[in-house]
Length: 288
Image (cartoon, rainbow, N blue to C red; front, side, top):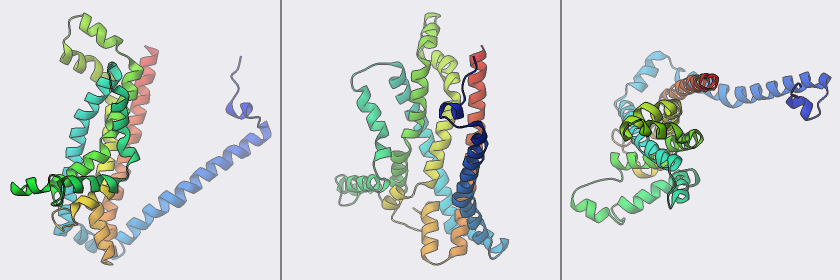
C-alpha cells in the first residue's frame, strides 16, 4: 500500500500541489535573498568601496590584527574546554542515572535563557574591583575583568551548552549496550571510550564544535561588558567593528566585518559537509 504524501494528508488537490510547492520555494528563496544574500553583499561591497589597498590596510592595522588574534585565541580556548566539558556531561547524563540529573541538564541550558549581557554583569559582580572577589584578586595583582581572562570566561559561559547539548541526545539514543559488551569482553574504561563511544559520536561532536566555534567568534554582549573596550588588548573582532563604526570609519568597519562574514560562510560550509557525512554514516549503520 502506497504511503500518502504530505499534500494528500492535508487535503491538497493534485492540480494545486504544484502551485503550492512553487510558492513555498519562491517564498523561502525570497526570504533568504532579502535577509541573507543582500546583507552579505552589502558588507563586502562597502568593505571594498575604496579598493583592495584600503581593504588590506584596514585588516593589517595593528588594532585589527590584535582583535583577530584575541578572537582566535578565545575561540580556541572555548572549543577545547567545551570538548572536555561536553563529553563529560553527555557521558554522565546519557549513560547513567543519578540524583540531580535533571538539575544538571537545566544548568547546561541556562546560557540559552540568560541574556549574554547579564552573564557579563555576573562576572563583573564577581571579579570586578568592587565585586565579591575583586579586592582579593587586586591584592595579588590578578585581573579578570577588563582583561583577557574575563573575555575567555564570558565566552565559555555562553558557549558551553553547544557541545554538551549535541552529544546528550545522541548518547541517550544510542544507549549503553555496546559499551557494556566491550567491558564484558575485557576492555577498560579508556579503551571502551576511544574504541566504542567516540567513534559513535564523532560526527555529533564535530557538529557541536562547529557551532561552539561560531558562537565564540561572534559573541558580542557578554564580551562587551567584561572587556572594557581597550584597543589592542581586550577588543575582539565584533567589538572592534563596533568601535570603528561608531568612529564613522565605515570602510574599515566593513572590512573587519567581512572577516566575520567569511568565517560564518566557512562555518556553514563545514556544517553542511558534517551533516552530510553524519547522514551517510547513519544510513550505512542502518544497512548493517
